[in-house]
Amino acid sequence: AVRAGLESGREEITKTENLSKTGLCFYSSMELSQGETIRLAVGITPDLPETEVSARVVWQRSAGGREHYLYGVRLLDAD
Image 1 (cartoon, rainbow, N blue to C red):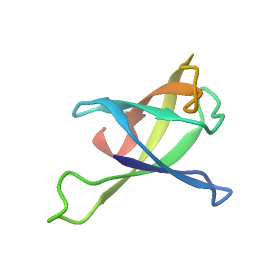
Image 2 (spheres, rainbow, N blue to C red; image 1 turned 30 degrees about the vertical axis):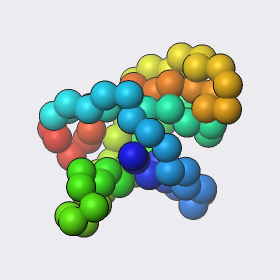
Image 3 (cartoon, helix red, strand yellow; image 1 turned 90 degrees about the vertical axis):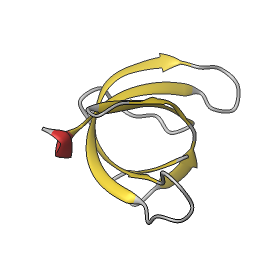
């Protein structure tokens, strides 16, 4: 799971499609713009605290259903 947060304070807990050292892909009902910077908190296991990082939206695809969008983001703290 991932917690995505916007500068406006809006947050959403959702699921990831995949994760790498430099980015991740996740589902969201929030409408984000390409190039927008967001905050992500990723929990690897319940025993460890979440890791929070900044990320930039690289691409967006329609996912249909309740989770309307699939986003690809680049982790900025990974640079």
